[in-house]
Image (cartoon, rainbow, N blue to C red):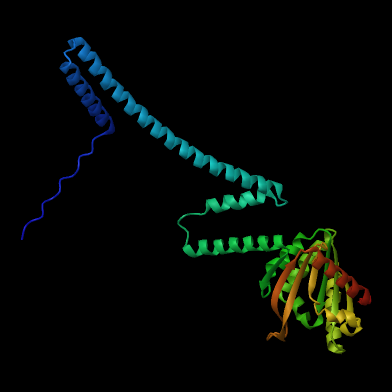
Length: 305
């Protein structure tokens, strides 16, 4: 079996040596040509030196131009990135979001260790995508979430500046004794203390004395937190108002409507099961909810002292 002949490694000639060799070759050819024309020896040497030097200079100029173009391309790419970053920063500064908060988010993202667990990065990216989706949907006028979103409810309560107008179904009275309900109630109390007008209408469905007594207890509890509470029975609504089945919604600053839709069945704890949550900022929908709340509020009865 014939042995394979090893291919000798290719010798890489340094660029400067290659330029010198090309210049010497050009000068040598020029010397041969001038010798063939029987020119004086001094003339032959001058011409060959001139040709060799010219070739060397041309090579350096070509190499310089190539490097200059490369630098220009890098600078253009860098400037394009800088221009895009500047454009995004200008858009951010022109928005009503707090620029410092967004910059802190970017700063904290850049500080994350590269050695962290993969699941942590996957979780953070998912949260960022969720926030991005929320902003995109609210920009379009409406955002939705399957099930109950506690973060929206609590964050909006903490962000309210002038008013919180809410309706609550009596069937969900046990919510107010749950950890979420107590936390939500505490945030409403804080909102009331900072000057936010908090109103709530409890809607009774039927004439169950036990349900009425439970709602009275919840109403007195909420009154202690500075919430203006009223109660009404669904039978007291006008026939035209019963066309709209939406009873569970909250208006924040009369500019954003937080709405929940309930599933037909109760959960094991007797609470209404939340099928979906929606945030609406479209003026037509918000104005509809404002009229709806005013109608319920005017038809409701204040809590007896």
